[in-house]
Image 1 (tube, each protein chain N blue to C red):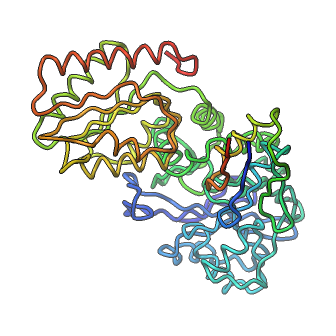
Image 2: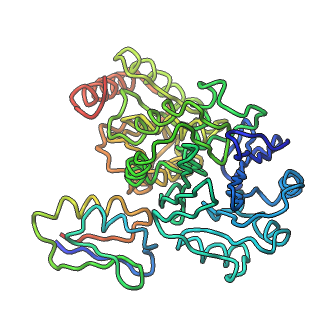
Length: 394
Length: 63
C-alpha cells in the first residue's frame, strides 16, 4: 500500500494484513485487519502517529521512504500492533522523540525495549505545536489498555483515535464505503476488547465530544469521514438499554440438549423474543461476543460430561463473564445421563454477571412432553421479564 | 460500608476518583486511595458504581 493523503499535510500510512485470521491467539479476524499510522506534516515539524505490527515493519518503513525527518512519534497505545515498530522508526530517525501518556512510558520501555531517554511524556490536554498544525492529546484510558490516549488536530478537525472506533477490516478503501460492513466489524471489535470497560468508554465519549472533529482516523479499518454513525453506534452499545434478545450458546453430544434448545428457540420466537443461538462446537466466538452487546438474557444449553457442563460451555461462560455484557437475566437448560451439577458449576463461572436466574430446565435423557412444557414456561418467563423491565426496549 | 483498593492491582486510571471523589483520591504514587472510612451513606451508590467500573476489579466493598 502507498501513503494516501486524507487532509493537506496528513497522510495515512496503512499496512494491510490480508492474511491474518487470529488476534491475540484468541480473536478470529474473518476479514483480516489493517494497522493505520498517520504522518502529520506541520510547517515546523513532522509527527508519525503510531506505527504497525512488527510483522509488517518493512511495509511501513517503505512508505516512509522520502520522509527525511520525523520529530515526534506519538504512541497512542503500547500494544505491539501499533507501537511494535516504533523501535525501528526511532533507529531510522535518531532525532525523533516518542510522545505518550504517563502510563505508556513504562509499557513502552518494559514491553518494547524503547529507551527511556527517547520518551517524552505528555499530560492529558497538553498540546505540541508542529507550526501550522497542533497535536492535542486527550487521555482516554481503557480503550482498551490503561495507557490509551487520542490526538486531536484542531486545524484539520481530525481525531486520531487509535483502537477506539477501530474495525478489523483488510481493505484498500481509504474511507468507509460500506457502513453495514464496518458497523459489524467495529461492533465485533468493541465486543471483544472494549465491552468490559463500558462505563469508562461512556466517559471517554463525553470527553472527546469537546473536540469538534469532522473525521475520525482509527488505527484499524477505514477512516470515518462521516463519523456520526460510529459515534451513534458506540453510544448505543455503551448505553444501559438492552434489547429484547436472548443469547443462547449451547452444545449437544447425543441430541437431547439440541432438541431442548430448538424447542426453546421456537418458544421464545413465539413470544416475540429475538434469539441468537450458537452451537459452540462450530461457533465463531466473535459472533457470540457481538450478540452479547445488546442482549438482556443469556441462556446456556449444556449436556453433562461426567458431572458438570461440557468443557466448551465452560469456555463460553468464562468468556461471557470476562466481557461483562449488560445482561440482566440468565437461565440454564440441558440434559444428563445419571446425575449433574451443571447448574451449580455454571453459576460459579459467571460471578461478574449480575443476573437474575429466571429458570433452569435440566432433564435426564431425551426430553419429554413435560420437558417441553417447562421450556415453554421458561420462554414465557423470559418474555415477561423483558416486558416488565424498563431497561429492555421491547 | 467500607471500601478498599488493592494497591497491587490498581493501575491508577483514576476512574474511581472521577466517579466517587467523596471516597477515592489519587495518591502521590498515582494509585487510588480510600480517603474516608466508613463510606458516608450519601456516597454509597457512587462508591458501588466506582467499584463496578474499576477495569481491574481492584476495589472491594464490605457492607
